[in-house]
Length: 168
Image 1 (cartoon, rainbow, N blue to C red):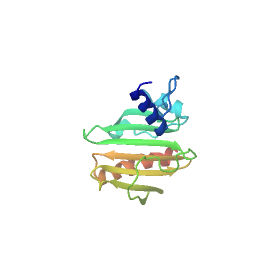
Image 2: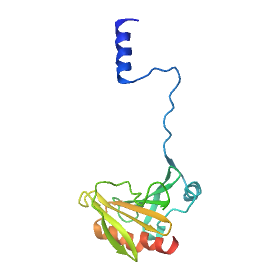
Image 3: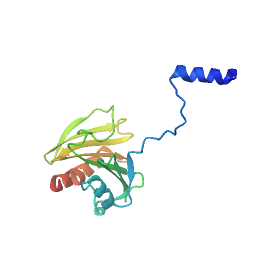
Image 4: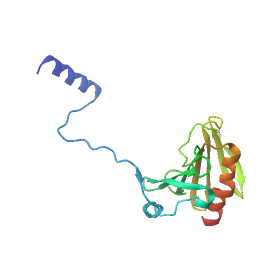
């Protein structure tokens, strides 16, 4: 063994890096994208919260995370900069009550149509708004960019939270 190979082996040993002749398998990606709402619903085992197109939002992204959290992306028909991400999971999933994936914000509770919703601004509202809530045996979250606080509250109040109160 030459000096370079010996030094590399010693460094690898010291760092706890082992050499193996077997290939290493990568961890599978927990996010699976779908082309249709029905395919995602079948994989998740429930019907994810969705905004109807008449609301002015059209779905442009559909995925399921680890087979447990449905994640739908929407774009506004009225404002090219406005986007919305909506997640749905069963309340007994291992992800708990907050499935937003947003951390380090100051949550404030507000009752909307009888449902307690935790709402926060992201970077003072400059980077968007986020909310999470539970209704029945499901938890939900919504994250928006390109909307001001009033617009986000309208989507929550007259759209998302209202739909969950009627269908979940």
